[in-house]
Image (tube, rainbow, N blue to C red; front, side):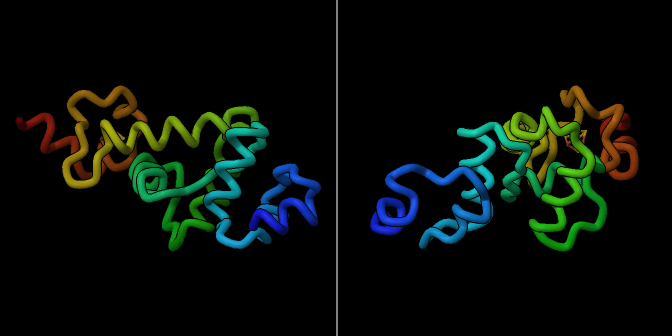
Length: 127
Ligand code: SF4
């Protein structure tokens, strides 16, 4: 990777996903992180938290893989917020909308959450 960075990109980190994924060891998720965090481009890295939380909230629908989730999120989130939304979704999935038992009782977005309306509302209100 270092050789390619020096020889092809003159020791600069390239600024597009297409260029970054050419580097050995760099996948689409990493390229999306680099371009959104460093260059504030409207790219969305989808990890396990982002994939799960987006589906629960209803920001994605029937996404079969991370690429479909990424494309739906890009289409549904205002362009200027996409590079920030990546962090919001990760943190929400890590601390509130956790995998096994989402903390719907304390979740600030439950009025807008598809999963809460369809799967959790009865359970939370009954407790
Ligand atoms: S209401 Fe529950 S399922 Fe929906 S985003 Fe919040 S924690 Fe997740």
